[in-house]
Amino acid sequence: MLAGNDAHAVPAYARQTGSACADCHAGAYGPALTPYGMRFKLNGYTDTDGQGTKIPVAAQLTGSHNVPARGDNTTQLTEADVYLAGRISDHLGGFVKVETDNNGNDHFSTKLSNLDLRFVAKDLKVAGKDTIIGVSVNNSPGFDDPIAALPNASSLGPPAVSGTLLNLSSANTLYNRVIGGGVYALYNNDWYGEIGTYNTMPTSMQDHLGYNIANDPGRISDTGYFRFAYMKDMKRQFFSAGVVALTTKRQLPRNAPSDDITDLGYDLTYQFLGNREHIVQASYVNILEQRDYGSTPVVNGVVAKPRGDAHDQTLSVTYTFKQSYALQVAHLVSTGTQDAARYPPFGKPDSTANLITLYWTPFGKDDSFTSIANLKIAATWFRFTRFNGASSNIFGAPVGSPMTNAKDLDAFTLSASVAF
Image (cartoon, rainbow, N blue to C red; front, side, top):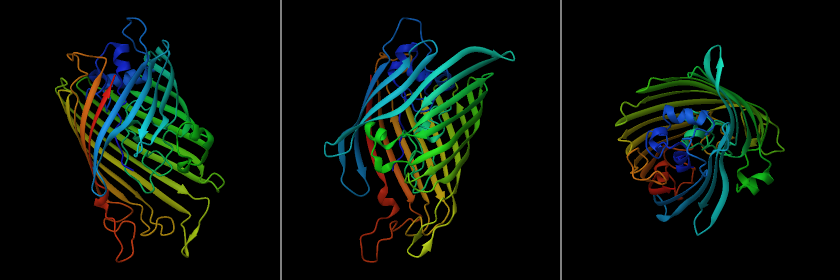
């Protein structure tokens, strides 16, 4: 339920390009991309320093000490990852993450996490303007987005009772459980466009890839994904404004009547890069989902509404000092149409949370003594002010029974990640 921030910054790319991690990321270990990093992604992860073939493999270990507002504290090796990341040829490259999670009590599960394989044609001219045209095959709508502001690319989405399909924190999310992609292009270094389609993986495949089929997103069909953005690199500053759309028919469960779902959203980002000593990055993402339900169940004598909305908003601001010390503050809101049958006990799926993260990255700069490894130490506070439409007794426990309040979902986490 807690949204997080994956780095998506792997030393394999630094070894391949001869560039420091901080060239592609404002902080030297992610998460947000600089314009240079966006260009590297658009070029299909194929840029190289020309100094021979590099092995496109990296690994990451993450340990954490978690202190929830309610429940036991835990200290454990949280995650171990292997990345196949880099160029295969001048026109073919990719990003593949295989993730092993510690689910507690020494129970580990391994899954195919992120996937983005690309074929790209570079150095083209269209109407005399520089143009990049590529094809991306991936397992999450929006993960391949170069601006990395959308939830699936930033790994930052509001915790949701009933969120949009593009929100990785939503129940039965499409995140990593679909396969598809599309064609994208960057024209004149400013105009970006993408069009594609997706299908959910069969439940048998989800199981083989390490996913619990109880969280199957259902069957989707007639799916279209569209992304357009204006990107302006002003060297010391960067600005982008984009729109995104996803339309599909979904059956959940897979033998149920299909719901017609349309996501429409927009996003704004700004970066002040300066001389890289003080960096400020801000992003705002607003996605509205409209649903025409295929069925209207009756729950406790109440008939569910035939139509509804889900609305996710994320505002994030990050300040980075010398590409080593950073503070990120995010405000996360998920709301939806009031429906007593679909969202008991209060009929409201609304949630509001705040994320505050401090982190330190000692390596990954041009003057660092190593380019083959990186380290991040982070402290994260996750605070809820509303969940399931309420701030107190959020699950509607009877009078006299133990109650759960929104603030009981708060958590503090101290983590350390090393990549090599």
